Image (tube, rainbow, N blue to C red; front, top):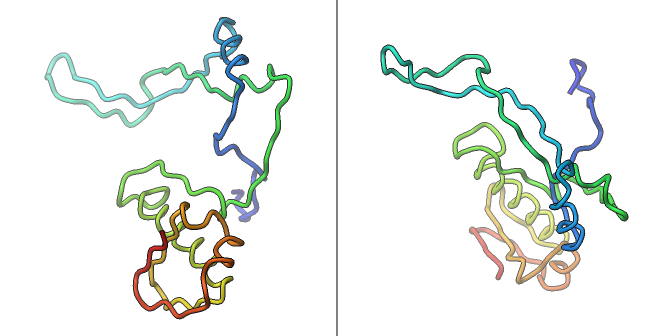
Length: 160
């Protein structure tokens, strides 16, 4: 975000890709299909004099990375699907206890999503009550509305 709180970019990739196997096979034979990107990283190392572990405060190494999305310009047919983040994406990138993108934040996002589905079905859910819906029970709000009768949920509940 910018200093004024507005978005710096309006879209991003959640890195969900589907590729034809024949396309991937063809691309695997092209040496330049996936270019190397330079990433500057902080890498701990052992001080050769003291034998102590050194954790640098600034990048001290270069890592070469390749990204599957670099193949998209070579694809004959590429489709972009825009999704509503709260309904389709909860990133898990950090360990438990982290401020964001943690197992706890993912679970909270999933509980919030399923709470909204159950409320659409006419349910009343007590504040802070965890509810989860198995994808084997319902895949979306519409299917939840079809299957769940209006009720008050006053204890942790899992639909399966």
